[in-house]
Length: 466
Image 1 (cartoon, helix red, strand yellow):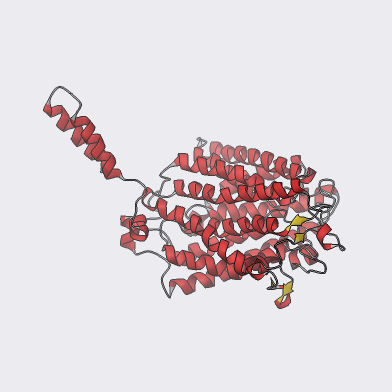
Image 2: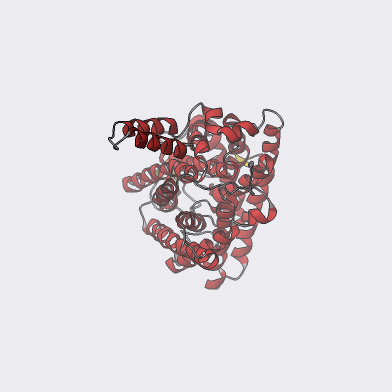
């Protein structure tokens, strides 16, 4: 039997997660310089197009097909989305052995396919923030194809593919089934994965011109806050949607997503207040994202009090972590390492302290340390986190170096200085010359009491434009 309410919730969740990618584009786009905003938006937007095609051709099959190549990746039984139309996934569709979710009813396979597609889309998009302001667009598109194929699809298989979920006797990934590490919505597969790759690419491309000597400021903070708000909204689909049913577990994940994000904002702003004396808009937006990242793996395994603790810790630690790049000299442009890698590690590891089966009795792992479970689950979480981190970093480093020494990964220094948008896309985000002309024309028709005043006003407008 298909539960139409669960199906509707999963499809709505997929739409919410899709919204996160344009939300991320605005979040990142506001933080870059005005002359590279379109390139940043396009680096995110192209992930929708590329991954949507790859997921259909072989990505879903490699992520959720039966173990192949020694469990490194799934097989090809779902290539081209074969065996999905009219088919079901979940415990009811598979028979014994039972899987943790989505509960007693089956879920249409294509609803699950589309939900997981959106996770696959946003993960490489997260990486783009580490190499903002200096990247060739076509080289980035090639990287997305290669990294998704070699890294994301296999890692998604390890983390998200449970035995028996896609059919009777289907065998999933080693992190989910053998190790029994817990990751409700993507702390390892999405955030640690993307953060590690972002770190590797930041090393491959090198520093932006003038960094860190020049203080490169965000060009549009309202964009940043808008993007963070869209991410927060979409994240309810990301986390609560991962319950794969309109259930109590979805309510728990929704609640934890809310309270952890709220406490993370407070944690980040508290660090800013104590360290700098000024809480900032950029800090509030970044704190929200840090909290969302950290609660992602834990939202279905901890209580709301645990969620508050995880968010508070993540907000404070990530606020401190973003300065590490200055100490070690790697130019992670938009703090992908400090927010996504560090936040993902925090949330994944803290399940080993705050996780409890009182919240999710179907969880395959054990209780955390604070609930009498000892250090067993913490050890599992650490193995999963560092295995994904090491694999993603090394493969991204190799892919990045190959692209760098073949077609080139970074724009020319002159193009970086003059404007990457014009060089890569033959467009600019803002037509300042038209705005200046309009202002001058308006002043020329306004009676200021003399030609000298009109001339002075026009000169002033021109100076501001320059």
